[in-house]
Image (cartoon, rainbow, N blue to C red; front, side):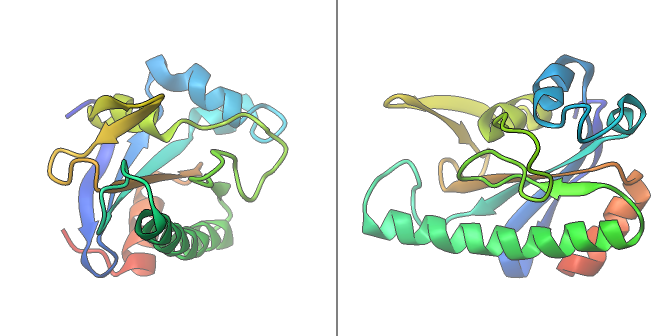
Amino acid sequence: MAEHLLAGPTLVDELDLEYSVHNVPRSYRDEVRSVVHPGILSDDDFGRLRIVCTCQRAREDLVKMGEKIEAEKDRLLETFMDWSKKLCGGLQELGHWADYVDPCSGLLMIHKESQAVYDEVSALSVLRGYECSNAGCCKVVLHPKWGSFIYPATVLTTAPAEAVLEQLKQQSGASS
């Protein structure tokens, strides 16, 4: 896989959540910089930024519409929010900057200074090499095993890879 990949993909079985840890590749820096602007992180801190990409396996095809689909998105959102709050809290306790992106709005949840939207579909395309497809007017990312039964979301941090991996293990009970 790409040189920016630090770890993963790793599946957290009990959550049906897969994560990978990445450095920000040069080709993707402007995109991430627009979300995490200098008012949030200095240039030095930005240079140490890690991206934790997550994908949850959905029980429904999230490209479709309807009550069942909306209920599934709510369930997946709640799972990600709980998981990411614990992960960010653990990293912050160690003295590192950490934040998570609201998958619904694309906005940072802890540091709300930025109103720039983080594009989860582009992130998985660039960082994990996942294919994208058009579903009406929306771009959809396709997981290589789960297809469009996927709920992507992201955590950002300045913690070193070792600290991120240790927190992932502690917070998730992760297993490969």
